[in-house]
Image (cartoon, rainbow, N blue to C red; front, side, top):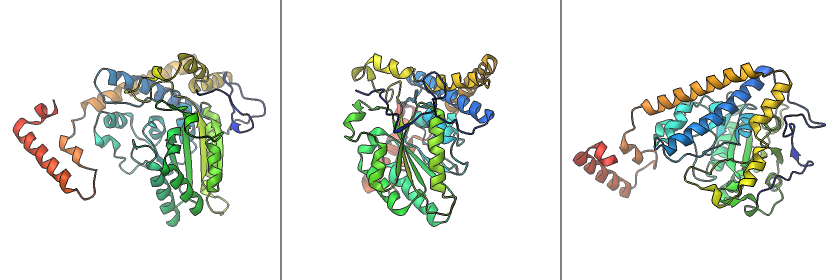
Length: 367
């Protein structure tokens, strides 16, 4: 079973569970406005998550992957990037890509089955990747190409602990280490790959230490401490950007955290984990920790929190309205974006689909 144990010698932490700065820890140099924005985005992510799960339960959206509990890791890491740095997400980075101007309505569209929600339209964000770990070699290739073009960009790739058991993980990181790509590999170790616990993924003490095999640094951080996540990601960005003219170096970040909800809305986590375990981790809620810190610093108060709450509820409601009012995509879109050159068997299926469509019409066909 997953554990709350931590090794203070290897895991970077700044805030304790009560939002107090740990002895010897240094708070990152962030101004009040950015700290409040990080808090707002975390709150927005949590509320969006809750509304999205509700939409799925009402039959208004397909399967959805909740992210509650992981807001600190997503927002803290994304804020460490520059505007033109790239994010290569898996399928749960709703809050991270929001910081790159991927609208909530677009995210909802995608999970409602509309591929147009996954078109990034010039944003420095790779499309969401549902297959496990396949985005990691893509991320390394993007970073290598950028380096060859002498660009000044960093590429951050997100994945879960389960992805570290895939060959794509090892191939992507090995290539990055050999070719000095400006990469950050960000592992959201949320303790469970669906129903498989982290300790069944590897016999290594940490995931972070796997970086040693590829010749670059790995760091483990408290993923439910947004300030600690920001700090280690900022360090990794500087290493990848090589401001001193040295070769860029990749970093593997293991953010130790917990997903409070199900792997997806098709999952029942009560089958494989205990409620007591979930409640233990909820005591480390990243939103509560940052809020307590900001209150103690005099940056947040009840009035400002109430204003933020009203704003995010309106923003999410507007996103839902926008996504649901968008004209439904052409059903024939299921044959697009699959193959560069369509195989004969797929062409036959598309032709059969069009014959049925002509005979029955879209509405009856979709039913």
